[in-house]
Structure formats: C-alpha cells, structure tokens
Image 1: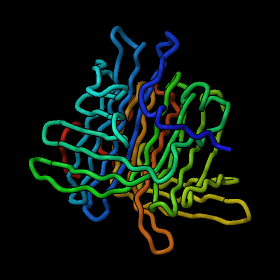
Image 2: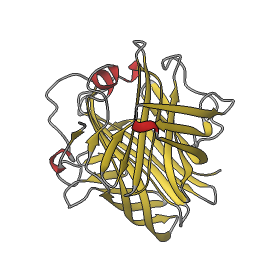
Image 3: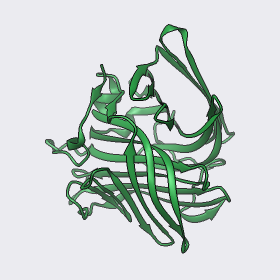
Image 4: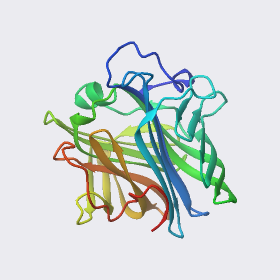
Length: 317
C-alpha cells in the first residue's frame, strides 16, 4: 500500500542534520485550458547550504498567445515566509496556514494567487529504497486537483479555473546522482489522474514507476513506457507518448502534444518542464512532461533550448 500523508506534512519539517544537501521543496504545475494560461513553480529551501541558508526558485508562466515569463535561480538567500511553516523564494510564497495550500507570486508585471484543492489524499508513489529515495527524495508526496484564483499579467487580471499536479519533498538531495529522468503527471479531473517516474541514477540504477488514480482509488502500473520526441538540441522536446500497463491487461496510452516548456536548473541538474495537451475518451487535459538528459552529469550547461523558455523575465515564443 502507498504511504499517505496528512495535512501536518504540508508545511516545513525539522531538519535533523547538518548535511549541506538537505532540502525541502514544493512544486506545482497548472493550466487553465479555457483561458489558455498556465504555469510551473518550485520553491526550495536548503537551510544548511550556506550561512543563513539558500533558496531555489522556478517560476514560469505560459500564455496561448506566446507570452512567456521565467525566473529561475538556485542561489537565492533564504527569507522567512510570512506564514508559519510556509515556503518563500524570490517573489513566490507557498502558504499552508489555511484549509488548503495557496501559492502567491509577486514579480514585476506578474501577480498570481491560487488555492489548490486536491482530488485525492497526498500520497507517496516512490519506491522504498534505491538512489531515487536515498539520495534525492527521501520523503515525497504528490496529488492532483483544481486550482482557483486570479492572475494579473502586465496589469490585466483574469480569473483562473485550472487543473494542477503538485509534489512536496524533503530530505537529502544530491543532484549529481541524477543522470536522466522522465516525470509525467497530470489530471483529467477526479475521475482520472496519472503519474509516472522513469529514473536513471549515477550509480547505474534504473527505476520505473507508474500509477493512475480514479475517483480516489490508486492503481499501480505493472510497467510504464515513456517515448520522448526530442528536439535536435538534445535538451528540449515536442511531447511524446506514455503508456501505463495496468493489472488485468488494461492499458492507458496518452499522446502528449507540446503547449510550451521552460528550462530549469538545480545545481548540477538541468531539466525541462513542458506542459502538454493530452486527450482520453473525448476529454482533454494538460500534463507536465518533465525530462532531463544529463549524461555528462552537469559538467557543462546546455547552450541551446529550442522548445523551452530559457530567457529571464517576459519574452515572446
């Protein structure tokens, strides 16, 4: 049975170590299909990494007319959040002081406030041992749901009614242990959410995990296959196909078509979060098709990004 957490684990946790690689982070991707707008956000705390601690930020916005926003920095000073046991990095904050988590972003030209209402309990879908959990995400949970709020872009405010997928991790995170991965997650609504992790670590280990959640009932896949449509830059992609092989011979196959992507960096790991459109039984949803191809283990930074935003601030696709 998967491990399920409760609301007490929504906030920050005791560190219990002086290891400089200890971190705690929250992450969410969301998209409003009707409004044609979405985003990707990660706030990470690394309290032992430097005097006074260090924070990492990933903040991205995509709009269907091609407008993009990106702020990415893994060397920010840690700042106290305005609410107890919350998270703060740059102009972004994650609040856990109410009935549901909330994310706020206040950057020049961009203001966002979203409440995150889960479809199912916050759950760990990772294996119990191996490099993925022992060196990257010792404690980890995920959930999908409905995001409600507002976004203001360059002075224009609109309501948001989106779907989202989020995660929360804490423990030792050594980014140099990651060589490559595929993490595909999303939701059609309470009737069907999905996730998969394919992980290749520096010690040579290889892990594949896949699951679906239907009206709160979790089913683990017996196998999962991820095909990525890579760009010639060997860094970004145009989408791909994910197949979950479920018990009893059932298969769930989703073909992901790129909406837009954002390049991100966390110390030695360079990766891409690409929001993609998927359809199933006449319904349309958005997933995050996150990948890394880090065969050189962070020895050099990518120099070309064809299908993901690599520019700070606002830009046009």
